[in-house]
Image (cartoon, rainbow, N blue to C red; front, side, top):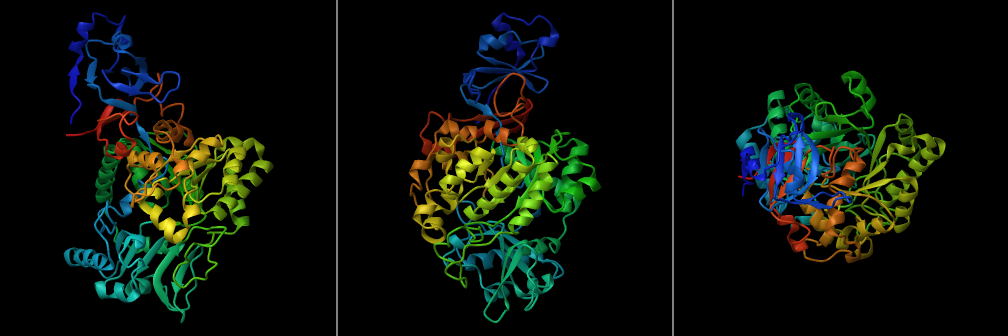
Length: 567
């Protein structure tokens, strides 16, 4: 439904006028259930906005004084207003690399349930689009954990899809790929070729590649994909921003900017002042200095036309659902062909991680370290502690460990002691909770993934994210997952880790703002902050927690501009 909009003549009924034109609001939002996320004034029913910022929060009577002859009024009609949702980790810029490609996701996102389905989707795409054999045709988001076969496609199966067409399938985690022989040849991955630095080519007992690539080995695929024109990228980037806005986001993250086309896209939009959302970029650790010098952006600076380069992203392990996260104890069931004591592995050894972290830490840059496994988290803690002890003046950089998925209780205490901020991917509970219980981690470790309640008990703030395009960028689904901790099969995974609705909402508003040094300008509905709002069809704090994921977003407002309205 649409939120009714009326104009300022309605204000005459109030009988109160501001003293001068400079005091008038541009917009009054009235008659709403306003959940401010500000502990000083938790609820309100009206908000006044001028020049994209909030000037008053309270009741209809409190804000009436700001009504002028040109003030517009948005009647919320009892609907719920929250601060605009803040994306704490996804890949909005690099989303453009995969936008429009064959979707191999399982339900509820897609409809792929078997290797036969994968073959059908890819074959149909090749038949329709007739891609050149000079490029690699890529499908995205296949999930072996939910295929009927419970395995990756074999090289023979991949070769049968479209002989003569190089094909690679990117795993839903983004940390694995399955490629046919034509693609492997184009990549130069043959028997006897070395593993790329930070990556792995899986091989059979004779040393021949099986088609499965891990971690940095998949990066080469991107250079062989069909190139999109700047106009196509701009159009698709606009569509992706609209998609985020439809979910209530007013701020989005590009969590490891690395592709030249993505840098081009972001900086062109900055120059044109055409971004619809605030976008926060964390470039890849191996290229950030070169890209900043070449392109002239400042790391750690403020927003310029809705874009800021907030810090740097380091990736140190893979994903638990893909069995590439680095664990201290072996996987519950090791991958096919791996030893029983297989624990995954880090991207780089401890001394290299220490060096990279210290380098950026001493620059005063915020560092986001991707760690899913607890052994990887140990490495991150060690690197952060070493740098903080050597350079205590840089502690205010707020290090973030992205995902922090498979943790041990004592690691939470280390996070608190060192000021480490966990950005939790609690969507794992729904999407892969059953898989973790029975296949990757076993029941005990699975129950402690994304340990949000224990984090609160340890005194931590945290955020919730979707890692889109790994899963859709739907913050209300992330809130639902953290509150209910339901798996696909309906199991409550780690019931003691369930948190309140308000704490989950904090994790997609004010705590997500804090994570990215934005807490002074967004995250709460407070005078002086940006007028970034999400209008919901129902109040998530009063309905059944099981229904939170189904609440409709009616309107998304960025600095007093409506960027999405449900039709």
